[in-house]
Image 1 (spheres, rainbow, N blue to C red):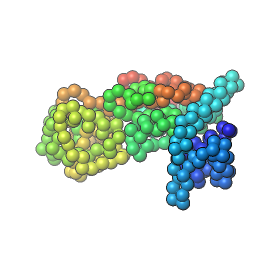
Image 2: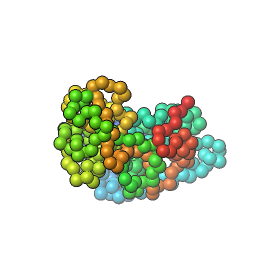
Image 3: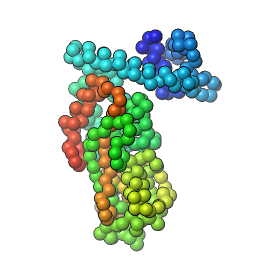
Image 4: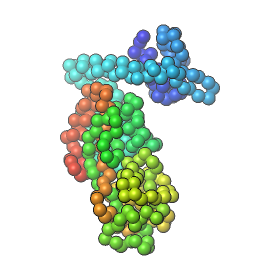
Length: 304
């Protein structure tokens, strides 16, 4: 069994498409198909169900998937050890990110990392299902690390470092009857239509958890994947929102902003890695760089 065959299998399992997997690996599709057939002959079982419309893992493929990831991770660790002796880091890091979050200068972070480790390629992925999707991808092994947000304890299977924390604030149209109050209770807002992110996003989870803790129900009438667009809908009188402070426009006369009464709610940014897989040398170098430039608590330093 060749490592190359396992790499091809893993790419197809993650993409569920032979063409995309071949493009990702920069090989001919015929080559990747032949490698999978060879692996299936060696193992004595089909690994994929193939039709003209879809590709899916068989039971044998599902069983092989975690073992293939572990084997490739062990091989990568062996290469890392040799690379460190030779005085350089190589490889690829796949990092999950959130969109529209500028309290951490990710371009600056990755620019600095590239300058220090030019032989390590960075692949960035944003999960359409928010932080919950990023956490699932980390546990599944398709990401090496992720910048994400969630309230409460770390999800099972993850090791988490807190990077920054900002308060959640109530946002209303300027003409709303509750506008102008020094602070607002969530109970004041519970009957209002809400503008919020979809389920799975960190800011949505903060509000959902606090509403549940206070025995309150609410109706989210508008869901937006880009957190910075929520204020646009509030500005038009389509609902109220509770957002992290970085997502609220400053000095907008058409909007009213109020702190929340009671226990202060915060949106918290973390970097998370798998708790069960040994991080590569490249990932350890990235985590060390994050530690050098992030202040706790509060927002991150700006990279220069």
